[in-house]
Image (cartoon, rainbow, N blue to C red; front, side, top):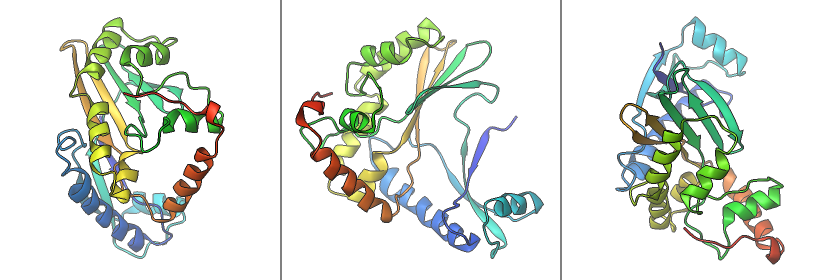
Length: 249
């Protein structure tokens, strides 16, 4: 059973450029994200490993129209964060749930996006309204309301729901850690943009009644994304005031 994930860069048409980016990205993660004290123990363990281009990798790269101008693929390897035999259910644009057949282990994957607010309105809820998404919760709401709304039609163990609410209400929860991290780096736009787009995994065990937290998708954002975000912020700022959401953590 596979328990590791291989991540490679497919941004450029040449393998050598993708390898260079993967190495720079790995260094960014370790120097800018993993060094944040509130995130150090929840950023998923990773290692950079060059893997020779064999027939299988050659097929993958050719399918992606990548020119093979290097002898290896620079891979970022990390653990698989849900049980290998689990099934996945997509709850909405930002949430997935993984359960094994015995329902003794549940993993919740979610993207909390912008927690620390740089405006006087909730950026997440306002952006969802602007995009026409019918999302009836906010990660800045009371966790019980979030969990009740999100899992209303999802068949998960009641013990999981109880334990995840308790965890999210704790001062050490991954959402509160991310809020603090986003506030800490608010003047470092490159790192802030990364922290606003991470993916969180909460893994629950029925036997231990425990919640384990991990964060992935901590990659450095390309500079060309900055203009897109700036345009979006301008659009949200001009969104009708009565349609903007105002609340706090």
